[in-house]
Image (tube, rainbow, N blue to C red; front, top):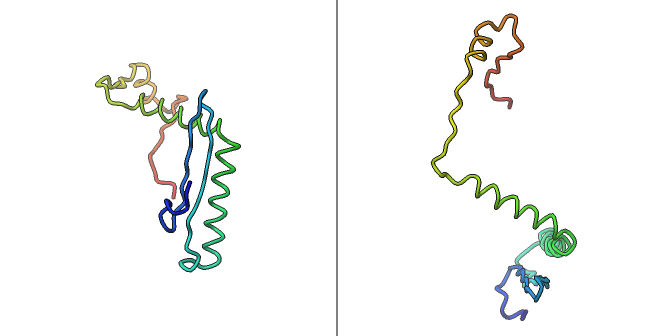
Length: 112
């Protein structure tokens, strides 16, 4: 990665995929120090380092999150097979006779 190719005030993450799905991770930044105060610069450098360490050491959890997200997306797609809940008569009777029932009425309230 050539510094001249990185836009000013940006962090670039590059992942090269090698044979066997082996990954080579590179992170580079081009930060104009005059544009930021000391606290902001420390945050930017810590972010860059943290991303690098996290991606190198925590690859499997990241892959698992991606896998779960893709599964959820697939399951969420509207395929026209909506399920409609129709309560059983016994449930309706239990709700009507709630004095001696184990059915608890839940009132929707905001809990802010």
